[in-house]
Length: 163
Length: 198
Image (cartoon, rainbow over all chains, first blue to last red; front, side, top):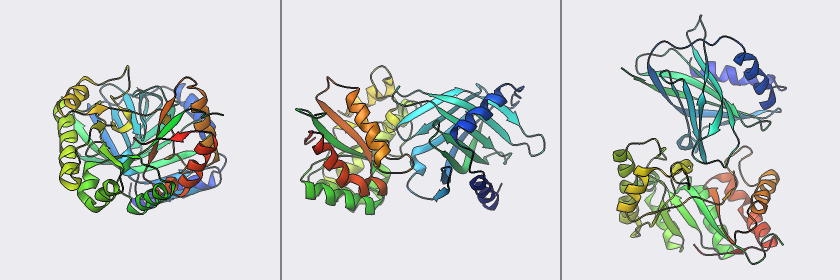
């Protein structure tokens, strides 16, 4: 997925102005009732954003600087754990995983629980990782707290093969 | 009142960049005659040494927030040591000050009940106290800054800690926080808090 695709996805999201955190929760519930497809390879994805869009029901704002150091996502195909660190806490949970048969993209979704300290609410994260090559793959992470809007983080994942 | 006979310390993570935000925050603190804590990233001190010196020259505390904002709880002992030691060295070399505190990024490995053994060991070796915060302003959340919803949340956090008399308030060096800081300081004083020196 190149940058123009990413922008297109974000603009598409802007049009879906009714979709917010609660809708994502419903979507997550629906997906949880579907059969999950486990990824076959033993890999860890370490995903760092380049740009992000902060979206409310009204609009999305593109942000290109001063956040990359403090937002990070990871998914382990070995443990099935999806994790994230966001500014003042880290979060993790076992994910439900889907693979798009056409594109090969992998999506891991979960309601993540704070792990560094209990001072924050759980967060819902959907991490979609492209097929990429042996070293890197593009990703889009969509995340949010309850009804506080949604954030799209986009960038590259570093892949680590595990034995 | 909420803050009667209570005090707060203002602290800012993730500096010294962005510079415009730092300069605005420092100006507000100067006008309000407040000394604060700045938990800086070693890699940003390397890139912006003048900004790190500005913090120290204006009488504020400069402290260790790791080199690259990594999750120290997941890091190996070797990596934790490198993150903290390199930051100690660059701050000392740049400002002449040796930090005495480490606030781990994300709070990871630093909270009571969640202390990371490797972080504890390295911090001890470097004579660093591991610290966290009492009030999370969530200034990074959209909309960035310290707007009305954030203020309500901060007020709730104070109310949930009625016996505590001194609070460390976590903010970040960023544009929205710099913009809203004068009003936030005014609100803290309006609640009756004394703003203490670190």
